[in-house]
Image 1 (cartoon, rainbow, N blue to C red):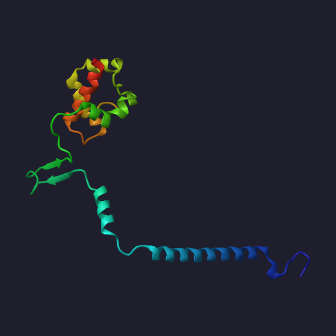
Image 2 (image 1 turned 135 degrees about the vertical axis):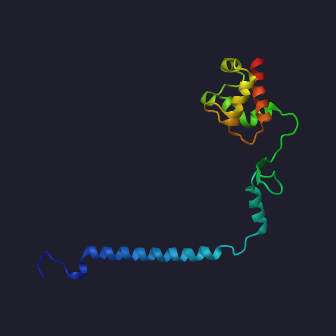
Image 3 (image 1 turned 180 degrees about the horizontal axis):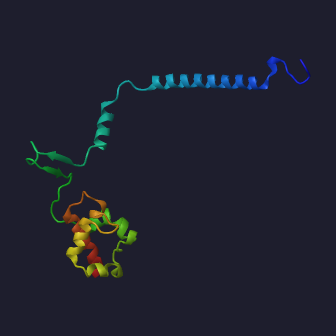
Length: 167
């Protein structure tokens, strides 16, 4: 043995390796204990009332029938959750669906009550405005992105916005 060599057991690299392997083994032991503890705490039965609440929250808002019982023969029919009944309050539809864009003019939407924004649109006529609101135009998707609205509801909201400019 010379002055520059160390005894076999004093190698710092092997000591580091032993410490690291010990820490890894200890980590796996702790993870194994945690997995066993968590799996033993998991309920074996699911409460039916919790399942019913979850089913209620995630139920679909409509149904699609394809022929057969409950639907027209040989055709697709979509039934909405809330059928269109009676007169429609355009102001309520505006507050529900149109407000987010038309109050601030998002993506070029004409602002409610701003005659300057509405003038070129009004020049096209109310039928064109209704058509654009139902089919979409530029950044506005059909029905403003609220496909659950009926055509009558969308047209009532447009009429409400137009009335705010004419006042």
